[in-house]
Amino acid sequence: RTSENFIVDINAPLDGVLGSLEFDGATKRNKPNLNPGDLVYTRVSEYSKFIGAKLSCLNSGYSAKNALGELKNGMIVYGLRGREK
Image (tube, rainbow, N blue to C red; front, side):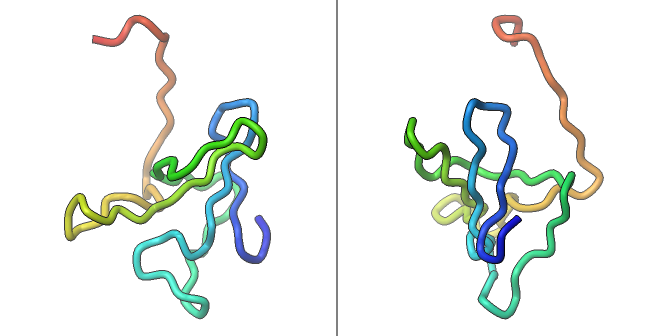
């Protein structure tokens, strides 16, 4: 975590970078309070093979209720590739 960004492990060769203002309703005075180990439901807004993924929790254009952001009581489930139905 830096003052303006969160470094996110996205299980890829390079980490993702999530800006502290990339949350619905976030301002310079009202930033999300994420701690190491917290789960975040986010989307990749930009990607470069040199600098990695830029992440965002802004869900503009999809619905008025933003489902992206910190997951409360969430968990990670890993699956085997090629076995999805």
